[in-house]
Structure formats: C-alpha cells, structure tokens
Length: 133
Image 1 (cartoon, helix red, strand yellow):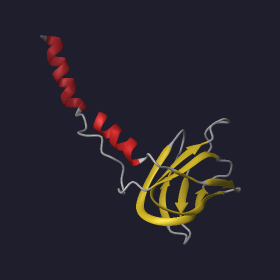
Image 2 (cartoon, rainbow, N blue to C red):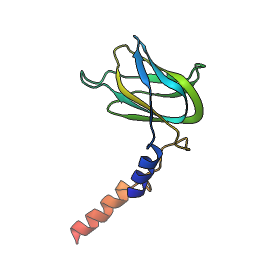
Image 3 (cartoon, helix red, strand yellow):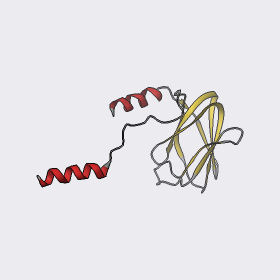
Image 4 (cartoon, rainbow, N blue to C red):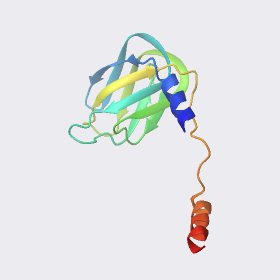
C-alpha cells in the first residue's frame, strides 16, 4: 500500500493549474500555455453541496477524453497523452462548479494498481473457522 501511495505522490508532484471559466452547462479549463498531460485532477466546489451528476471532458477538437457521473471532493481522470491549452467539461445538468483543476504528465495512461484485491468470502470463511476454534 505504501508503494502505491509513493507512486501516486511521484506521478502527481508537478501540477499545471488551469483557470476555471464556468458557463451554464460547460466549464472551460484554460491553461496559460499548452501543457502536455495524461491525467486531469478535478475538485468540485462543495460549499453548497455536490451538484455535478454527469460530465464529459472534451479536448480542443471535441474528442471525449473521459466521462463520469460525479466528481465530489476529487476525481482523477487518466487518458492518452496529449498537448492542450483548453479543455471543456460538459455537464449533464447546470449548476456544477469546480474549485481547482490540475493537469499532470505522469508517463502513464492509467492510475496505479493498489495490489491484489481481497477475496472477502475466503477471508470471512477463515475468520469463521478461527471464531469456532
């Protein structure tokens, strides 16, 4: 687990922050100059509750880079590497706001894997056997 955390910290150590320009059903994410990126980190402004319930991230050519339902406190979006100066976050419903946006060039097009998943049924059987003994 510590190795995965160290890898996440290494990959996201040098953010490029975007200016956030909200519109009714779109949020423009503008960088001061072209940035090379393969991950975008979004923070939703939650001061008045969570409002983003469906989004699509588009590049300057209108190509979908990522999509999802919610952003919440923080959402990390991996996608194939590209260079952009402007991105558009298309919202399914109006009213969503972001508090921060960071671009990252991590050298990877996916998030780090946390390791082997726990087989809960197998674990529960072991715990039951120990409790019976």
